[in-house]
Image 1 (cartoon, rainbow, N blue to C red):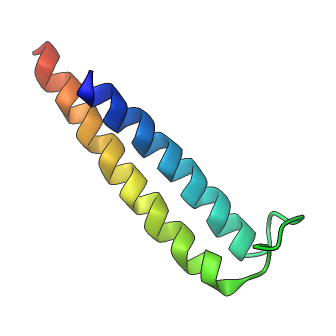
Image 2: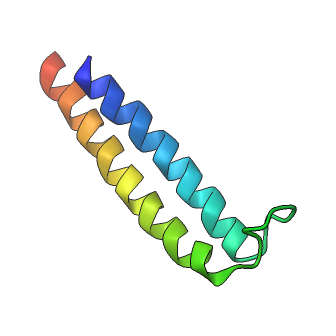
Length: 66
């Protein structure tokens, strides 16, 4: 059960990080975050953290099955 939480949380963080990056770069408009360089820096950091957490969840799922 804990592995699924890591996986879901990691995927959500990765998606949010990707969105923040695109908003910071001005690709996605309609927000106060659009075109703000700070979000172009924070976004990839959150994206990478999310991918690491998702990877941990995937590894735990594989270990529990095998």
